[in-house]
Length: 92
Length: 93
Image (cartoon, rainbow over all chains, first blue to last red; front, side, top):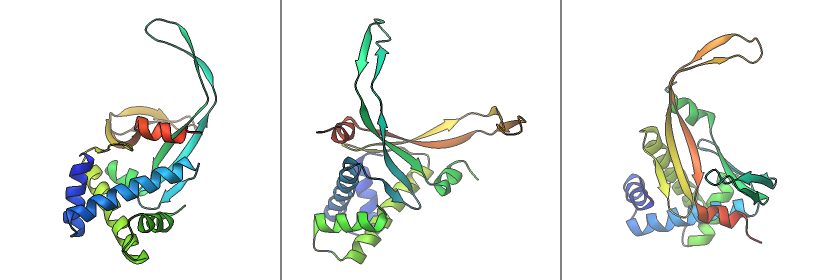
């Protein structure tokens, strides 16, 4: 499902106009991005938690050429689904 | 930050709705995403990332405490793959 399909489905589920649904979907993911950018953690109880993890720099290898490459320190987002959602997906 | 804080930010961003309404709509949006994932369908948000449902096979695992072997049944797991844009946003400045 793409963002545009999500907007369609959300507008039907929530019984709001497509335009309003699009505005909300954008505002939601934009707010989430901003909070993560500030290094924050976002806890969405029934859905899951988003956090930001720091990674140290390391020397990696280009798997094709075998050349060493320096990989600088970076931050990556991490999502941990709620246990409720994990159990449901696992068919429990 | 919790759901209510996020709903508040959404309210600030779009304006013209109450805090309560923003909270309800954020919940409904999360329900829509969750229902889609539970049907086994991936959700791709351009500029943010993809929620991917992956099928895992049965495997024999071990209880790390007792050392006992046990069968971990086939199941579906959810992973999040951030978009390049989100990765860049987190590494700005």
